[in-house]
Image (cartoon, rainbow, N blue to C red):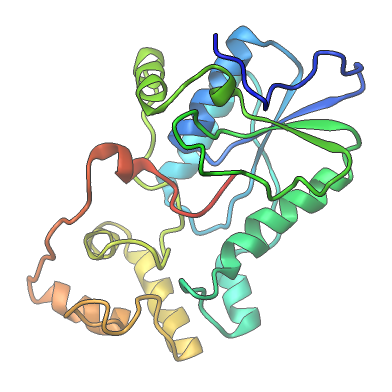
Length: 253
């Protein structure tokens, strides 16, 4: 087994709490399940829902809790719709406050109150450019990256999930994520009418659009985009392979 500079010392006292942050994506899911198998401890499993995830994501979190032997503990700091109404603004690629306000800051605040702990983060061995340093300034928190310690890259993660019979939802991010591709907006309109209607409501409320104007030749506003879809227009599927479809774009935990 390849060792890493990220390995946590085994001299922690019994008072140390072991926190596993779960986005529900492929990497954190594989990490949590494998940790329970080969490094058994009294883990606490944390997720940070925004209230805007597809139904399949909540079902996945529930099944994960069953596989891990205990349910997820959600850290909730409001909802995406609630924050949009409060700020009268939509998140976009320049102002990605949704991740910061609904995930990073709430988890950091929660960690400050737990005492000495190890936070396990699902960064792989083949993505060394990612530092995962959002919580390094917290004095009571040590971060561990088990996938890197095990030398696991995307190949190992995928093989392990296949072995365990675990399928990651097609979308692990928000239904109204501004990063999603045009084909995903089409699928949202086709498959989740309530989520689509909420998006139109929020665009009308704020006077802005989730999609950037001029991003392509399709309308930016959801109400106009809906009309194009209703006319029978279907955008080209420009997504890469199935592994990329499973990734949670910028949202961590």
